[in-house]
Length: 109
Image (tube, rainbow, N blue to C red; front, side, top):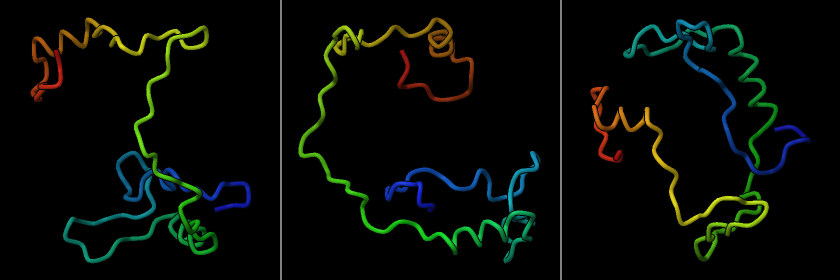
């Protein structure tokens, strides 16, 4: 959206759209059923920035790989054995084992 950016768009432009208790946001939404929002400071600037800087067109040179990319092998620059998973930290294992939170942890332990 500026001459210094590449043609590949990735990421977000707005930290928070809806004005929250933390004070961030460019639109106040009175209720979930509201038909309109109240524009806050920054809304017009953001709208102008989008209007004056259209999103890049095309795929930015993307090409889909034809096969999975293998993990790097262990060498002097990459000191990780890609066939081994790291140990689960003790604190994380305690959460998984003792179900300290009321969430489903099927992926754990």
